[in-house]
Structures are given as structure tokens and as C-alpha cells.
Length: 131
Image 1 (cartoon, one colour):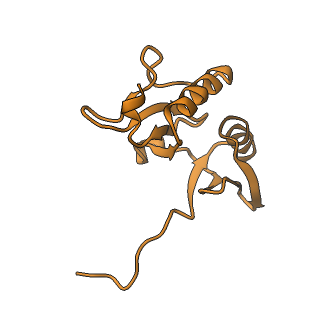
Image 2: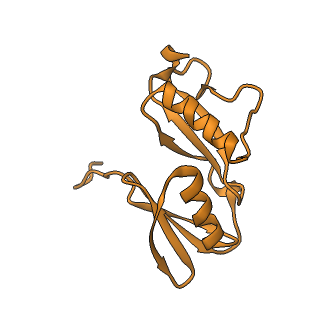
């Protein structure tokens, strides 16, 4: 079955968080996002690539395995790791932080958590050659 359209890039997605204002500050400080707008129950933060609507609610990190953000190269990924550590971010595997996204993958990643327990990833497509 064909569709009469092609899905584009992700415009935004919403995450239930305990404190939208505090979460927005974390996303701004740690991920370099900017506040885009506020609304009754939340704050939207974003970058040129995506907007995240942070709304007051019961966090449910088990409903999403993870959200991945692409970085341009392995050097930037290593700089991101240093930045995460400097900001005391919970990194998933502190012994071997950067590695293949899956066994045999040519993509590399780094997994970490936001304050509400959502699993996030920085990834470099084809970055395995630079390890």
C-alpha cells in the first residue's frame, strides 16, 4: 500500500516530566537547547533539528527505549562525553561509554539519562571507523 505523502523530519515530541521548568533548564544546560515557548502545563525546548514539549505529568521512561540525537563525528562525540561528565549526567555505561550502537554496527553511540529517567543517545553515523 502506498501513501500520498512522505513523512518528514520529526517536528516535535512530548515527554511527561515532574517539573517542566527544571527539565527545560537541564535540556538547555546539558543539550544546548533553547526555550521555544511555554504553555499551560509545560515548556518547549528545541534546537534547529527538533522540539521537545516538556509537560507536567508522571514520567514514563519505560514507554520509549531511547531518543537518539546525531552528532557529526567521533571528536564531537568525545567532547559531548566530557561535557556530560562535567555536568554530572548519569551515563549508562561509565566503564566503556562510547561504542557501537549494536554488535557489528558502523554507527557509534553514547547513552545517558535525563533527570526523569528518559534514556537518550548521541550517535555518529558511520563513526566506528574513527574509534
